[in-house]
Length: 105
Image 1 (tube, rainbow, N blue to C red):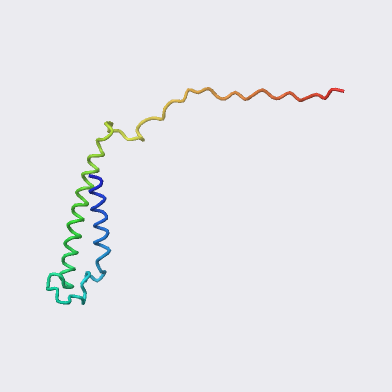
Image 2 (image 1 turned 45 degrees about the vertical axis):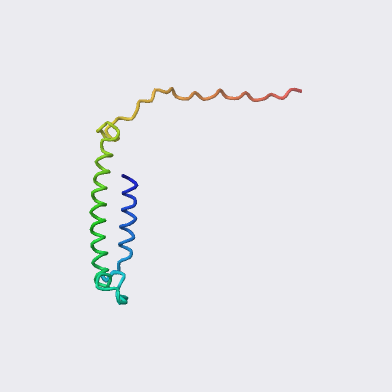
């Protein structure tokens, strides 16, 4: 399900980047006899509809993945609710001081 979510996310990003900021879409001024479906207005409507559908699928997948992850580890507590583990280690003992070397004559 995570892979499908990744593909929907990439498709949504691609469709949004293809659109023009004026809402014209890809086919502004370039209909070239392709009919009304792929004219400037038809392309904008198609991209707007595709964006809405992909956004709805993205939201449903996000909510589903969030709900599935909620019960994944078995405990319903937060990490902040648990106290830190008690440490029972003894403090480190410093090493004994080194003896100075005495020169012999």
